[in-house]
Image 1 (cartoon, helix red, strand yellow):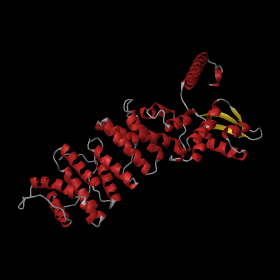
Image 2 (image 1 turned 45 degrees about the horizontal axis):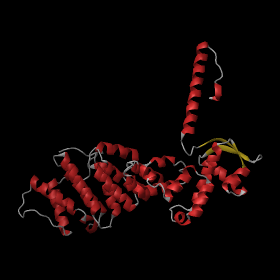
Image 3 (image 1 turned 90 degrees about the vertical axis):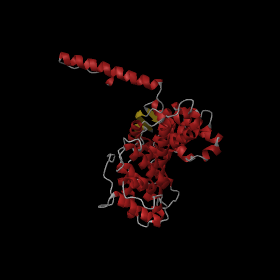
Image 4 (image 1 turned 30 degrees about the vertical axis):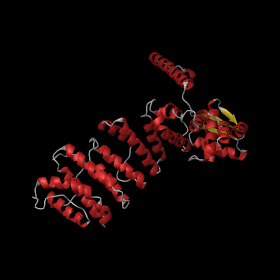
Length: 393
């Protein structure tokens, strides 16, 4: 017997596995199941091996005919224990996949949460290094999407990515996982993780394949725009499926949110009213984000901004200005303070909406200054005295 379980699955105690299998067969027959065994079969290992796949095939009858969740769960883990008796790891893996597939393929919508719990527990039982765990995870995700609930399993995108490397998953298999992760995280209201999974998905498409994922790319663009805490989006422009949207309204809108300003968005909205109104994000939400992004761009070019400039550039009423600036500071877009007596805000830093040659040059100059300061400090320490570093560090 090969031990491929992370933990011992609960099962019937004190009964041989063949006896368990025969008891389960007898119960399933009362539910209407049909089995293909000789009339005078012998109670031996061959009979057990012949009966086990038939029990797995008929197991979904428990969901409609057995009234007790506890009994369904007990029967399920009994099957897992029986599977563990198989002599070869590949047999265990294939049979485990059949049990998982039988549950997820059951079209009856009753007790979906129980099905989801059982599949999650099955996934947790097996070592993640096993290739069959890929199928178990796919089925877990399908039921998370269907039920909108996640229990017993932690979905960590980086960890799952590592698992897929161990499973030697091909590109198509990885796409299946990342698309399901996106749908699962969306179903359980974890929008930021859903977006991360979608970006991982789009990265799997080459330049020649980008057009195949245009639908996913459109969803990715709108998800980024709609998320209230995502402000930097220029990295999307390098993804081949996003590039395939070039010339379409969603790509034009993304470009505005990458490096445009409020006036650019308002012009786009006025010219494409029907398109914007059908998006999964409101015009008012777009205005809020574009005002914040416009302020971030203004703050990159100066250390102080007059209130009058903000009122004009952001199309805000004077009484709305202070709450807006407080929101911008609270969101992390800018660091600064309001100087109400002088009617301006002082800016100490801001995010970079795009990261291009000027930003790289700034980092280069900063690193060179730090390097010079370190040389000065080292020389001063060698001579036993200190000099004031240039440039303020």
